[in-house]
Image 1: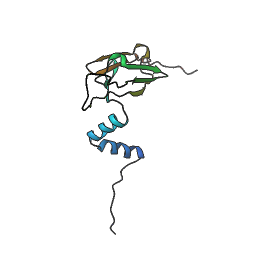
Image 2 (image 1 turned 180 degrees about the vertical axis):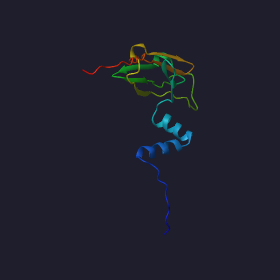
Image 3 (image 1 turned 90 degrees about the vertical axis):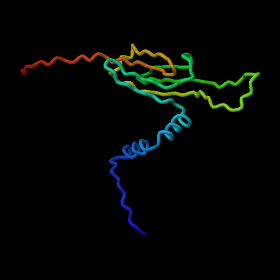
Image 4 (image 1 turned 135 degrees about the vertical axis):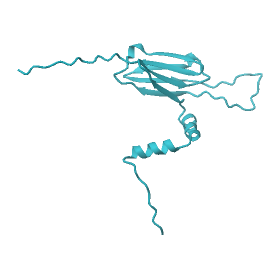
Length: 145
């Protein structure tokens, strides 16, 4: 029997899990994300005045989406039902599939929830989350009584 030295530089299970998922090939993680978990990839961009959330969801139309805000939880979902009710066509193979999904994002107090806007164009759902204007307190001297 031989002794095998392991390099365990993980300070927590979170570090270990992050490394495992970061090391997975992108094809495997994409398959898990799209086929098992049924949710689309997302980009979140921090711009000067807004956070921009972009979901890659080609093949849908605007009315397929539902965007709701409840207790600072922003939820984007679709309910898509497959229908192959064409009587004149016989599908030999179908690989196009639009699946229902639900993604939720927790918003913090920096978001102006009254002015959230969304638009769908070219297969990308873009949600603009405007930042609240920061009111920095002006420094002042406080007298001790």
